[in-house]
Picture 1 (cartoon, rainbow, N blue to C red):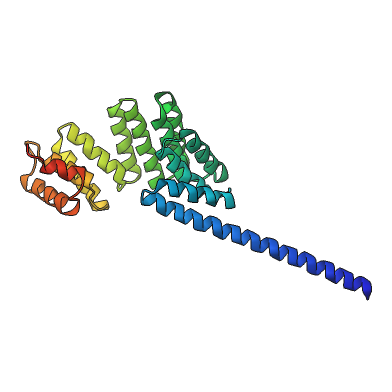
Picture 2: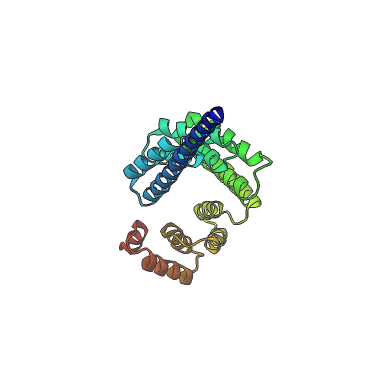
Length: 252
């Protein structure tokens, strides 16, 4: 019986060790998730230093979370720590090869960094837009990104082409609608600008920027005075403490 007793004891020890290891891993996953959620919350409220601490803590517990790497990439870009931002974007994509959001963020980052890297960003956006796995919203976001790159190259005509391509992929893409409203207003095409902005507002809530754009569009000689007043009223009532409202209230 003695050998059986020893074997049983060994099995029990192995089982206890496995349980302890599983429990430790679960604690690490929970801590990583909790810190990740806190980091996102602090980012959204503008507390970037605390957000950085929480996201780094999350990665200490779990370095293989692509969402955490993408989030801290965005944060580092925001505080202009560009080398760290690029490292984390690449790590997020390495961990999850089909992570469209991280790919789009990285491509946008490249176009925004410096003129020499714009072709890199455009190449990344092209890959996303033409990937068979990309469809609808994802492809549309990639085309909007290509429009960003074109603007960085001072090519508004190409930017407009890409934005219209975005709407072909997803007619409700708010970024494309807003940008096309701006472009049309700059071209003094009031009817087109009005239509794009109305489509934008049909998809999402007005912002101070979109309402101010509406005021600008309807201030044109062929604008609608009543619609201008409505945009101005909404801007003053919903966003009273914004730069857009202060500019609106400033005596001409």
